[in-house]
Structures are given as structure tokens and as C-alpha cells.
Length: 346
Image (cartoon, rainbow, N blue to C red; front, side, top):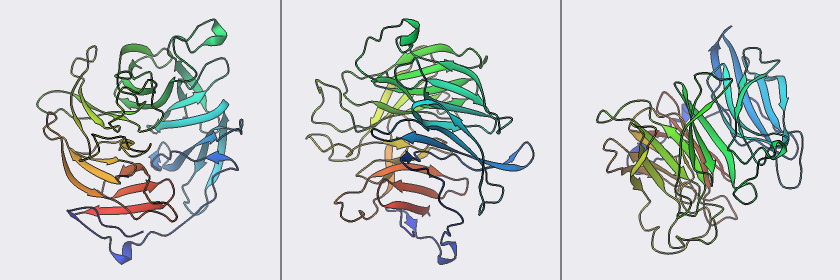
């Protein structure tokens, strides 16, 4: 799909029209919710692709992680299917050797943090796991929250740390120097008083003003009750993590004119890119398309550009869900209904 990106962009050249080289990886009733980059230079120079498998609705079982050889992109070959319990794996990241995943595991309430070693992709091996105290119900733990509100949503590695969004449980920073035994560094959050769950905790891999930063996105769904912010939609926070024991949220960004009245679910923020390449950050903002947020001054983030695709019929609104930026600067925006837009800035 050719598309323009807001106020500072151009359409892709016709010669860059993307071509489908393969399709059909998803299983019946399974949601393909997150795909990693294709890794082409790991170990033997082969290509690995991981695909989460998550059952939807009342369907349960068969979930986990699909591991594919895509060294020939037009003919992917399944190497193995790592199975887990419950609905399967929600989101994950992959560094080429280890996968940091959010599976459901028997005996635990909701998704937990798990590290898989894929040195031998035909035999994935669990290295370590971490859960929030109260999740291990089979071990006699009792949750202090209702239902599955505290669960691992999305682990992202930076050095020897995992930055983990934990839905209504906030954000968890884990020390994974010893991967077999992840250790809690800090936990913080803002739900309540803000009603939304935390979707992403994305580390910025370089310092700004000599300090370390993290992008924290709440997802505009599943409001906690009582709703203490009915006049607001979920937004993006900039957090100073220089002192990782005591992170501080120092600024935020919201699309103009959203605060001040109640909007339908999935109007506000969903997630930023998982790999930060510079100070201008693409963020998927549900009904507001993709917004490019400039964090060169973290105390005063500003919008640099935006793009809102056309809604897919019969929907009146877009549903911009996932966003990725490659090392060429191309931006890939996935709509939950309307498919993929590939964007180029100038």
C-alpha cells in the first residue's frame, strides 16, 4: 500500500511496491499478534522468524510460539512449535538467541515472563521465568487483584535488563544477568489513578542530556473501575530511569483535542516502536493513526508528523495497532482491519 506520512513525507516509489512472497502461517482460531524482524545473520547465516500463537475467544489450546526457517522467504519451513498452556503467547521480543515471551503457564494466573533459549531452534529450552507474587496460585500464592489484571504483556531487553509491561500491574524492571533467576529491580505504575493498562515499556538505548529514558505507553482499552479519568484517553509517558530503583515520569504526550471528554475505547494510544533508532519515535495511536513524537527534549515531547490511513469499510475509524521502523527509515503501520501501510519520510 502506498501512503503519505503527515506533514513531512512522500509516497514510496512505484518500483518499491511490496510483493507478497508467502502467506498462510496462521493456524485456525489463532491470532498472529506480533512478528519479530527476520534474523538473517544468526549463527549459521540462516534466517529465523518467530510467530506468536494465541487462541482467541473461547478457543483454548494449541498456543505458543511458531519457529520458522525463512532463509528462503518464499518457502518458509516450520522448525518447531513450542507449546504452552491457556491461550498461548501474547507478545514477545527476540535478540537472535533468546526469546523474551509472555506465555500462560499451568498453575499461574495470567501470563508470566519467560526466557527461551533458541540456540537449537528445533528444541527451544526454557532458561528462566519470573512472575509477580500472587500469580503462582498452584504454589499457594493469593493475588491481591481481580481476575487476570496483573499479567505480563510485553518484555523488552536492554543490556542485562528486561523492561516488562505488566498490564494493570504497571511496569517491572528485571535484572537478567543470571537468566536462570531474573531478579526484581523495581516496579512502578499509575493504574490507579489512571484507568488503562500498560502496554509497552520501551528503553531508549542512548542517553539524552546525560540521562537514561524509557517510553511508557498505556493501551486505550480495559479501563479499571471505578474509572477515575473518564474525560481522558490513554497517552504516552516519558520516564527518567537514570535511577532505576526510583523511575520518575517527567512528561507526557497526547494527541490534541482528545482530553476533555469521554471517547470510545481504542481512541487513544496503543504502542510505540519496540526498537528506538533516534529521537523521533513512531507511535501507533489507534483511531489517530501513527504519530511521530520528537523526544529530543524529553521534558517537552512534540509531534513532528502524523499519518492517518483511510478506514477499512465498513468501519468509520482506523485502528492503528502495531508500528515498526526499519534501518532505512521506512515505517510499517498495521491496522487491525485495514492491513499494512508502508510509509517513507523526507
